[in-house]
Image (cartoon, rainbow, N blue to C red; front, side, top):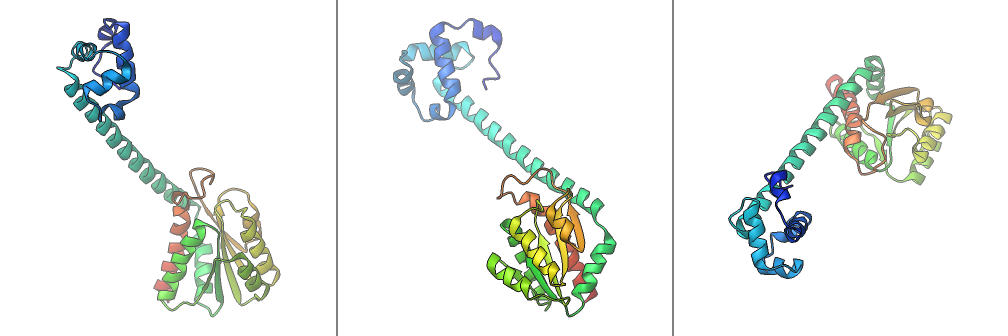
Length: 249
């Protein structure tokens, strides 16, 4: 991290000074709360040795060295924040663009037309997917389009058992293999309901069941169940469906 220290300077340091420098480099944040006496006791070297090291590597003393360390830590943290922000932004934008390429307008229009009929609409997904469906469900309710968004697996199974050709189940799973969602879709399908599935653009169990399947693009496999970013393309598609319905209503 000490970018201003050249190799020539390092070569002039004694073994004791190298030990002190190594400790400082490995414990930068702790160093900020220490005074020179604290550091001296911790590394078992005199304050004179510490001051001599500071001067050899280009600082007037220990206080200036601490100031430099603080500046480098702040700069490093800021760079990490910027990199994280850029990565999240770029990944989300890329996934939405790729998902839009996969989007079949004919399928979307078919779903919207069903929303415009008196069919009963049901949503089901697990985990964070359920949270996204809750948002879309409430969006439709705002425009007086009744629908059901199920959180409890047992209840959705019972609801699917009672479905007919007048029902539509929108089943969403990022992997397409979430057992509870697949099972609900199977039950609904067996009762004659229209099943709409939204899954990743890979072969999966749920997409095989759907009368209409909409594929989304995600950057990676959903190994982290708390990864809301991977569900942004799903929200993108659902929002297109809801917005299209609202405009046609």
